[in-house]
Every structure is written in C-alpha cells, then in structure tokens.
Length: 286
Image (cartoon, rainbow, N blue to C red):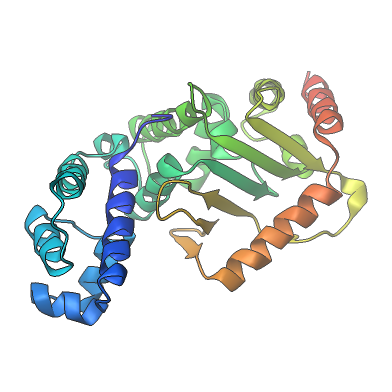
C-alpha cells in the first residue's frame, strides 16, 4: 500500500483538479450544479473526493469549464475510472464499523501522522496480542473469529510503515501507557519490546511524557493529525469516540491542535531517553 496512489487518493486528486478548473473558468458551485441538474452539495462532494465521481458528470463539467485539451481530459477521466477500484479495506467491511472506514481512507492517503495517546499504544504500533486484548475489552459481544478479523485489519494498516515510501509517524505517549497491563505481563513485555524496535525505524519517532511532568497540553484528550501531499493536500485532525470518530478541518482548529502537538513534543523526553524508558518498562514486565 505504501507509495501507491490509492482509489481514495485518486478521488482527492480528481476533486482538486475539478475545483481548480471551475475557479479558472470563473464558475460558481451553484452554476456547476445547475449544469448537472444536481445539488450544490453534490458538486462540493465531488471536489473534496468524498462523493461519487461519475464519468458522465466529470465530462459534462469539463465541457462547462471549457476544457478542450485531449491530454488533460483523458488523464482526468482515466483517474475517474481507476478511482472506481475498491480500497484494500473493502474486503474487511464486515470487520470494521462504517465510521472507521473514513479514517482508514485518510490514513491510506496520508504522508504523515502525528498522534498523541494517553491510554493505549496506537494501533499502528500494536502487536497482535495487544490489539486482541484491546479489541476484546472494547467489544465483548464479538466472537473470537470477529476479533481475529479486526486484528488482521489492524496489522494490514501497519504495512504503511514499511516499503519504499513509508508513512512518517510521530507518536507522543503518556508514561502510563507503558505500565498499564493490557492483556497481562507477557503481552505487555512483547508489546513494549516491539514498540522499542519500531521506534528505531527512521520514519518513526516515539516520545514519552513522564509522570514527573504532571499536567501538560491536551492532558486527557488524545488526537491524531493526518497530513496529505497529493492534491488537495492539507491536514485533518481525528479524535476517537466510543462508537464514532470526530474530524476537524477548519484552519483555526488545525492551528490549535498543531500548537498542542508542538507543546507535547517539547515537553516529552527526547526519542533516545524515551526508548530507554520503554525498554526498562519491558524488562520490568519479566
């Protein structure tokens, strides 16, 4: 998955180009909607890549915007057709909640992820045993096969951390994450050893906020910032809730969370000291 132009990424690219062409043609969203005889919200969804982009609709918009160059039209329509392919996680839609599919789409398209966590090791750095314990505790109604499917999805997501163009991951953890016995001492020992190994990868940075620090920025409020390079680029903040996810994309919100992440990085121990603390915690597990 790493380095590939996923269907989600292609939809974002098509949408960004449609918006650029519409603005260059001095055409409003309402005018584009009138041309397609659809709602303005449909045009907006097409431009953000969150809505269906049909070949006939894109062709009609290109005509409206006066795009006559065959090369541009062919490239854009080719991207529309390739974007119809399903993302990798569609084969696991029975194993994950619908609301989490949007997060996996964003994660698959992101070039970097910054995450603050004060309770758990982030999913991208979990071992199968740790992930199974977390998922079992949170989903008591699921049977073993369903839990295994969700663990598999979590392990598949981690493939973004390897390959020729791996995801850049920067994690800040509360020290309590290292000492909470999720799944028991042996599961935690393996998890912490794995966390220390992962932190040695050049594309992964792990910092720990020590107990001695007391209160700090975003205390008690874990969040994730995902950044994108492919058009339309930008960033989004994601926060997990019990049965849903919250997304923030306004500039003011992004500035607040970027500032909070910068303050967390500054307050945390440096990566080398953090890794030593992780290894010590693993050794204490026996």
